[in-house]
Length: 400
Image (cartoon, rainbow, N blue to C red; front, side, top):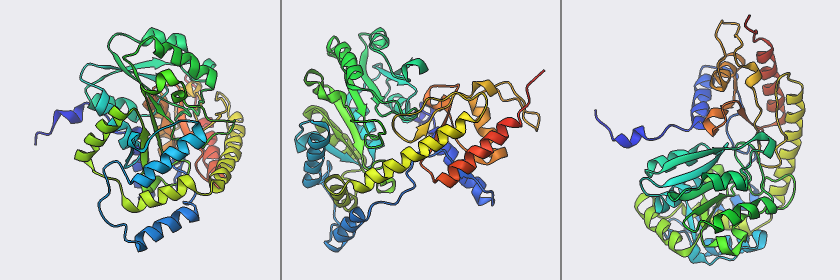
């Protein structure tokens, strides 16, 4: 059977691969501790679920506009002005089946074959694969731990060429939790001022999972706003992963392009989820704040447990719900079964099959010396998982 060559351009997301392997082990009766997926373990707040139930009773059971209900797009505009000081009209908002589809729409609308797309590493695994699907050229820029895994203005300027079409980044960042402050964003914006052909994708899906202060968006700079596409959604801040709703706020021409593309893929997003999203965006934010406080407590516990493991180097993440420890001190060691741990991929598979803990290799995010551990899990499971990781690492033997 000969399938499309398109399938050879991109890889399966490592995060989903680990989740699938974990499910297979559970099906065999193995007690697996899953610290791989970036999914809040909290339930969707009651007022949001009530809005969905009401929508069912009110017969919101028909096709929706491709870009989403007008009142939901108005709610997104209200949220962007209230939280971010950003002015948009509903025509500049496109609601999609998750932020991942929002990103795909945007890339397909902007990137042509041969266009360069700059992505600072570490980055979310799907960015590069969507660019490859569009025929673009991925240009990874390695950032440094000493800079908090954030790209500097100097590094950005050195990477831009006449073929650069798009810059893709997240703040807060998955997988590092890196958070750009206003001064850092302003420095990057000044570089983009010199290169008017470059669009900017600002992925802000972890906006609410912030342990340090005010969220800053690069779209706040007036001279750059007309080239910036803000990506956001409901999954992380409102514990609505399964509801599958994301959105963009973009220049009108790009919003119209995304509407056109989405019209051929999925058409309008789920009607019931959209009614729930209005309640989430305009309703009581206290459940979100309470969830974030719990994440902060878990982060502190995880950081303390990591400090007790020799050879692990890890910065305290200021946002999101991941830690991204450097584990290269264990490369070259031998497992009790006689296998050599060559890299982070090997280490993750060792944890999975020996310690029965699921984490994700940093290689998937563009940083091969690290692994990603999610603390979007209960304190009990985090303590259990880190204990098993510590014991598994202690059982590795140095080579003579």
